[in-house]
Amino acid sequence: MHTEHVEDVAFNVGELTLQSEQVLESGSRWAYDSDYCISLPEKLGNGASFGFNYNDDGALQVNELNFNQKTKFTADSTKLCGAFFVLKGRVSITTPVTGNVIIPKDHLCLFFIEESACTFDYSAGEHKIVNFTISHGLMSSLIAQYQSANSVPSLIEKHFICLPINSAIKNMLNQVYDCKLPAKSMKLLVQAKMMELMTELLEYNQTYHNSLATIKETDLKALYQAAKYLETNMQSPPSIIELAKIVGVNDYKLKQQFKTVFSCAPFAYLTELRLNRAASLLARTELSVMQVAQEVGYKHAGHFAKNFKLKFGRTPKSYKTWVSSKST
Image (cartoon, rainbow, N blue to C red):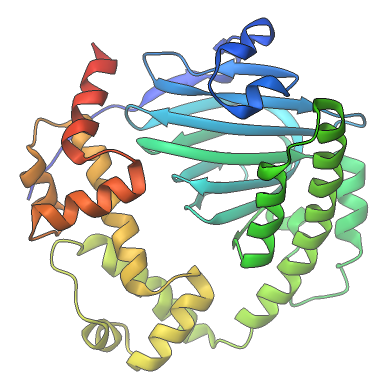
């Protein structure tokens, strides 16, 4: 078993440089229409965040970032309300009040933060993240409509609620990404679409947690135990039948309910864990591609390389070379 000890790269959001006059240098389509651009420092990787400011404390930020290694950002204490959509990559958010919340790929996070500093941890590799903020007052009034639904977690009390991105939400995000109107018209349409999405999310939060309410508490614990077991045993994972026996449920229930909670089948969940871990090892260690493949549980380097390229857009070898060139 390989062990490693690598310190995270830490960065304060306030140290990033606003580059509104250099936006057009970026290859992203957002560069031509956004109000501002914040480039990722070369020592951390490449990419940028593109921002759109609206009245009443509303803002949209599209983040297209590729980190050389696991990176930590800290943001000063502030009030923040809105939603965070992780389309690629994996992010965790930590505050003194809430502790740590992990948002994997194809998940979103509704947030309601009261004057608290935040730490954002990004895994190594490519990230595509959209976050939309609205005013504290507007978010509070929207949430208040659902306070009578006692079975549904209150965002004001929990501060963060993580949900899988379903097909309806993905379609709405695609409409934002695919918008080809002139800049001013696009900005208005995007704002309207994101406000529609915020109202949809609060309704979705209610229906999603109502569906979870149909799962027994003991079964729900078993599902999270199964996910954790896959993470800690990715080198030699059990079959579905074996995993079901380990956590104490039948295999049919495990497959059905796992998808309800995690929005993917157990095998797809395992693949995502393996590839994220592989990207970290390639960036942080001197292990060869074959050694990394074995470390995360792949027996055949070809199969590993194929899956890795599908996720990261590069073969493991070229990814390792690219990360190495960025860090020198």
